[in-house]
Structures are given as C-alpha cells and as structure tokens.
Amino acid sequence: EDQVTQSPEALRLQEGESSSLNCSYTVSGLRGLFWYRQDPGKGPEFLFTLYSAGEEKEKERLKATLTKKESFLHITAPKPEDSATYLCAVETSYDKVIFGPGTSLSVIP
Amino acid sequence: NAGVTQTPKFQVLKTGQSMTLQCAQDMNHNSMYWYRQDPGMGLRLIYYSASEGTTDKGEVPNGYNVSRLNKREFSLRLESAAPSQTSVYFCASRDSRAKNIQYFGAGTRLSVL
Image 1 (cartoon, helix red, strand yellow):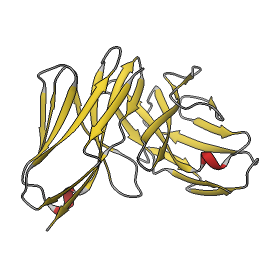
Image 2: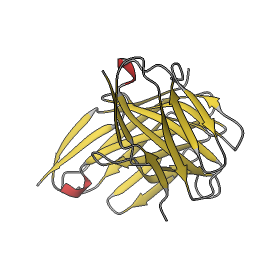
Image 3: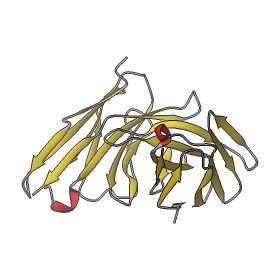
Image 4: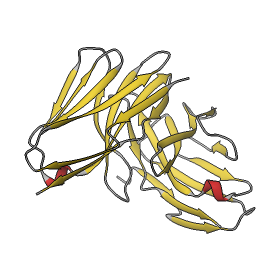
C-alpha cells in the first residue's frame, strides 16, 4: 500500500534556529515528490517538485532534497512568517497524488 | 484569474441529507482532485479525474460520488451524509505542463450533525 509519513508532527523553533522536516514514503513507483505550505484556513500552496534521488531545490530560506526513500525540507534561519503546516505529497501512478499528514511549524520571535 | 473556486464555503447538514460540493477551475487544466482534511490526518484523496470523462477512486471514496461535468467542473456528492463526513474538503486542479503543480481552492467546511 502506498504510504507517506512526515515527522515531526509539530516543531517549535526560535527565530533563526535552523532545522529539518522529514517526509518518508513507501510507494510502488515514484513519479514525483511535492512540498506544499498551508496556512490556517487556506488551501495548500506549492513550494517544490523533486523527481529523482539526489535532486535539490531552493527557495529563500527553504531547501528540499530527495533520496530513494525520503525527502527533507531544510529551513535555514527561519522567521515567524515561515510558521505554517508543511505538507509532502507523492505521485504514485499517473495523476494519483497522495499527501502525508503534515508538520506544523511554529517560529517564535 | 480566479484559479480554483469552491462553493459553498460552509455547510451544515443533518445526518442522511444529501448535498453536492461544486468546484470549477479556469486554468484549462486536465486533472482535478477532491481531498478531505481532518486533524492529524493530512489531506486524503477521495476521487480524482485525469481528464474530462474519466474518474478514479482515491484512498477514501466510500460514501462519495463525483462527476466531471466538463473540463472546468468537478463536483463531489454526498448522497446520505454521516457525522464521519464532517471535514474540510479541498478541490484541486493540476497543470501537467508545468512541474505538475496542484492548485487548491479555499476549501468547504462541512459539519454533519
């Protein structure tokens, strides 16, 4: 059964304190891995797409990496505006996209 | 550019009532999706449609039906609502030509009493 898990469930950081979020997946065939950000009361917003092991993508304070079994979202020197829930998703077969449960990030000033 | 529009934004139903959640996108995307989001469980795929005229089951399809009315519209129907269907429902569309990004609506908050 295709499965996506994320850890930790919640993370509380001081402003400027770097950390990483994990996304682990067990799927029959990975066609792509996605990271989204979700603010309270809103729909998810796209951050990154990764397709193959070893690939990396960066955007401002965020960097996403991919291995054969997991992906990491590294947050460098976070700011309070980075507080949100971060969702990982995988495309398991043509057009079928499933999500992990998410990591709720709080950045304290 | 409106993107993905969901209606209604809020709804309260009694057990056994039926309703249809509407979703429309104006980005000419082929693929559309319905998810439900519950605390601690993330987004769970209910149904998806890879193209006009096709639909497929996701992880949690029981108790739901869908219709891909045309390329723009993808509706989700609850025939006989149950309290377990209390959730936030998100519709998404996907651009297979550009990074396979999914674009999400603002969600429908449904309570079944």
